[in-house]
Length: 402
Ligand code: TTP
Ligand code: MG
Picture 1 (cartoon, protein in one colour):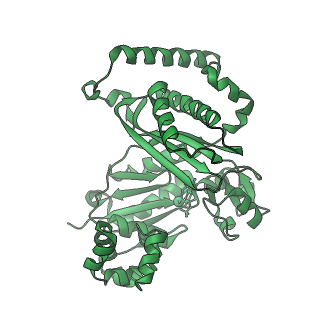
Picture 2 (cartoon, helix red, strand yellow):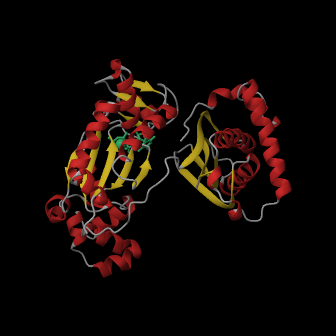
Picture 3 (tube, helix red, strand yellow):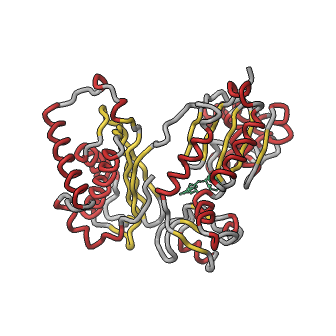
């Protein structure tokens, strides 16, 4: 049976939420990422602001240069999370096979839902209507027989899009697209393909797969198949929370590694506390460091056991930092997160290998005491001694939680 896949992506998500919640921002260039003059990057820009050339990941300074009269707003992750939960709940009315890719984007496999709700296009239309009526936002939907084409379709209709690519339409609708639109083709690969005169997806579809394999390895075959409309990747139902993390952009670049480690400590403290509050444990620990020239390293380690304790998480983050931080290079952003999350009650005890019970109990006790005190007297009443030095820099902890 041919599959029916829907890809949904909200339009200018963070900015649209802000415009929805404040009528004065509507039809205005809204840039979400921080106050004017802050040193972060743009998370997103409303379509009005995009006309000025402002886009995601651009430095705030550049955004202000391009759009000096824009409305600049801080990131309100908590709010976007809760809107995201509402959107995902609408999707789940139609199928349990909802794969959330990010807060504002998901794949739905509605193959089995058609009997109950009608054709995929009808389901997509209903979803768009529900998002408009219940959440007051616009989404772009793409409908196709696989993930690759569905995502392409939702992009092609943006904003407020509704676009279908039938298998028989690949030649007409997909092949004329420039090669840069291809999933998995970054700048480097695009350059190589352009050199080979492969300028469009159609040219890729018609090129020799053996040559592609020779140059790009397995990835070459994958690209060849995608270009020919073949993509068998299943839609895998995900949990809403993929990771819990925090990061911060400094007011001034920092080179002092002791200070950087102390910041990581405070971020980890926060993240591990959030995990315990939400009853999550995780296994993969990520470190992110952005240098003054915006080059960014992301490193991660997966632990044997799930944990929400400060000590093992911080120990891992610190190890990653010591291994990968290039000494003396100025850092503008540092962050950490934990992924591979599972609800505490779902983690079968027998899966916990090599746990030194005594040690584990001690950690739980210490974290528990700190959580209790902080709950009773307000967050940050008690912090580990080393963090006290950071109190005067408290304003740095304003950034995103994902
Ligand atoms: P996107 O879906 O990539 O972008 P968008 O929804 O703002 O705009 P559109 O889909 O209409 O092109 O990302 C969703 C949200 O994720 C976005 O609103 C803000 C956040 N985000 C970042 O914080 N940094 C980024 O670099 C990107 C691309 C997105
Ligand atoms: Mg979007």
